[in-house]
Image (cartoon, rainbow, N blue to C red; front, side, top):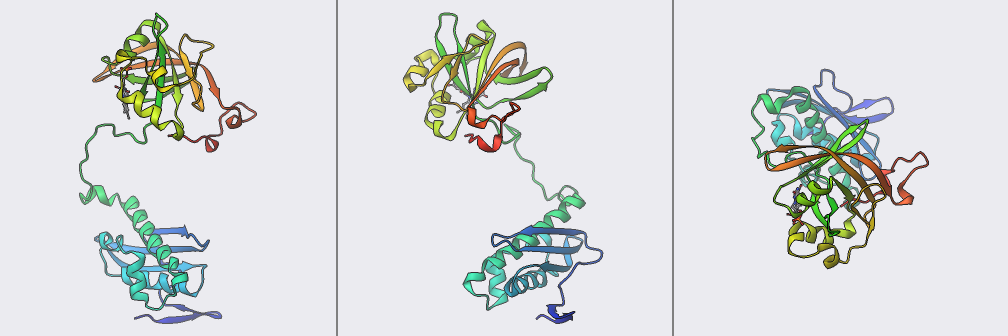
Length: 289
Ligand SMILES: Cc1cc2nc3c(=O)[nH]c(=O)nc-3n(C[C@H](O)[C@H](O)[C@H](O)COP(=O)(O)O)c2cc1C
């Protein structure tokens, strides 16, 4: 199935090396630290030629050459589904301890196909994409607990995922709240709230706050959540959340189901270990739900 050529002191497969005229290319790093690069030349959604290089071991070269040979003549939608098991089956005698080389080859080929698709906008032109539902379509959504306080001092919090940054000068954020929520009335009354970023450890509280209404009982005490007063706004901070953002409402816009409360960021509290010397948060150190 494979022809070998001699390049300098190395004997390499015929399909080794960069491909002139390739219209898809990708280099990826495998779990073992080896890299593999693939070049493909695609015409009418069929891979006419595929080549590869690898800085890995002999078996990595063998898996690369097998995947490249399998790809030739295959449609991009077929080749993108080649698995490491498919490559191992064709390659034949790859020892188990090197079977990850086949995964590296499958992934490198897949990445080159993705690159070809990106370059050619092929999915859109050939109708390969399917219309999807638009509900909550911007992802990932932030998992937030928005806490607030009624004029009678009642504290409450609800889950909000319709939210985002909306200005950095002045610093402003937006939260979307459905008018039927108990919290909506509290925020309308006081004009302020706290956005609390949630950690994975707070999953139970998050679920409770998102499925119960403060109208039916005090959720803060029911969950045993510790709160402290905001220093700028009249709303409680959920102490166990890694980041709390005190906000004052400056505007609101009704957008379909939600009212978008646009608010200034008046003060940000963050766990000390995640704040850099210049005051910015090192998000790599923050675990968010
Ligand atoms: C995952 C999830 C996301 C939610 N996102 C929002 C949201 O963005 N805006 C909103 O008004 N309600 C949202 N809710 C619903 C409220 O959190 C929920 O109705 C809550 O019980 C309202 O509490 P309240 O009546 O005490 O204000 C969400 C609920 C869940 C579970």
